Image 1 (cartoon, rainbow, N blue to C red):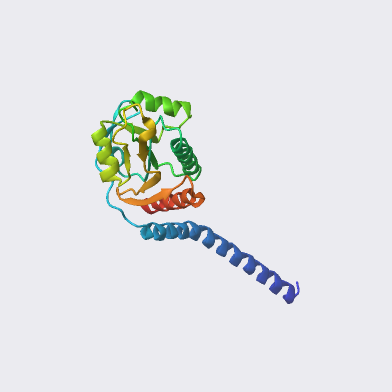
Image 2: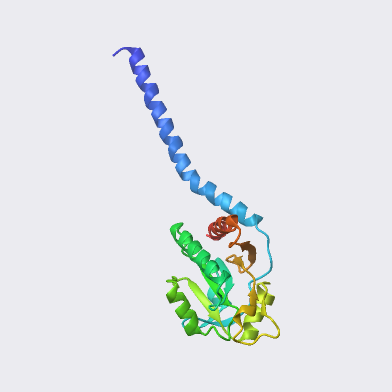
Length: 219
């Protein structure tokens, strides 16, 4: 066989080998690059103090405390079952975020909804609320408890507003007010972000990116 033909084939095989090696290196490096970017994004998130210590009750009637969230990245919100306005929207947004997290393989994330109307929202009513809306409670807990304990957790711990008009009766649920932010907590129990998700189209997307960054940084 002529030397030029052999040389051409040799160069072709060398070229294919180089391309294959580069593709393998890229495939191995891509997860590391993503992890590095996630860690950089996670380190860039602000800190707002520690997850509050609390002891409440979930929708099944079982005790639920901050210890049940230890080691997990957490998204929390604040709702009540009689709310006719923003709470259904918050719950729908949380359900969407939960689905997105599952699709992204973020199985370790925990979701928590604190009732700001705990005198009315018994565990049975929270369970009915979840069932009516077909919520996946495998990693989403709805919490209630004594009013003073909930207030300490929400107001002093999460630094989110809640309350009702001073002259309102227990049946006047329209007088209840509360913060509409989702709160992101990292695996070390530190509050890392507050996100408006109802009237801010970018809020949920930003939360999802930060959530993924914290999960990958914790791995």
